Length: 370
Image (cartoon, rainbow, N blue to C red):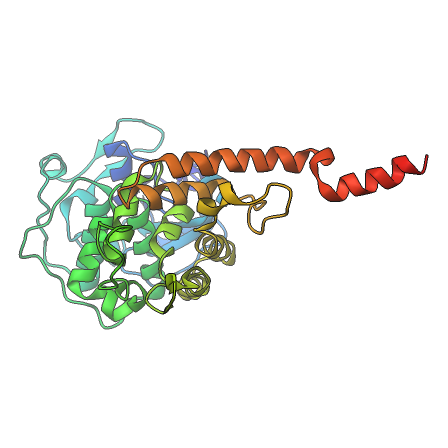
């Protein structure tokens, strides 16, 4: 993978990995889809060093570059702060974010006095900062690292939280090890009510206790994150939204949440497009939500017939979602193993033309005419 600093190093423009990017490296966790760098120069030098600059108007970036999905894994932005800009001169709300990492040197970090004590302390001590910065940084820090906030900490809800910042905070929370922490804080602070009512609607939606002893739809959704192997963005968005259709569904005999997968699929796509996620990611997550119940039924479906949704390249990721969904409901992994076995059998059948009814019919016609 190319270094985030490559465009600047090749132009002899000194830079450091900064903020969450530096913290990911320091704590040894998988890098986020978004990158953050500090460039030692001004806007003129930056413009000469690289093409395609954007100016997002965010408090945490003076400029940005779109990342190649082949390098970032999901596509996203590389956020740039300039050393002589107002954004860089302003203090971070939390000291660990002042950490810098020297590019291409695995263990070389820099920071102001007291940075290492702040990095090692689990307690985050906020400095005076705008509510937007306090909320953004705090929710991400507790989701990605083992930091905690003072019990009395509660930022105000900004009256205008930019759409790009909403997308970024959701991305950085969900690709952390503990997204339930950051999402829980956003709910408690009133952010979901103000900006993401689709998620707040999950709270208080009761489920049958014999199937979901973990609690309501919100509690169940938060529980699913405990069982991910990797904090993949598409999978995490799918987990977050897989039951989003339940609050708007109707109860019919035998089904408490009738058509909730179809309702949730449409809701998920609208929600993600509103936040500026790509059509590709939105469509993929919509598929995961639409078919999240299919793996449970797969072992009972006839192999010979075409099964809608099974041949999609994302089906293995759907199986991962199903595993997290099942385990979060205090069930064992048996249903997941059965679904995996049925999927392998389906793939084998699909590759064997002599077990395909239509192929057999044509073969009989052909062989019979010889």
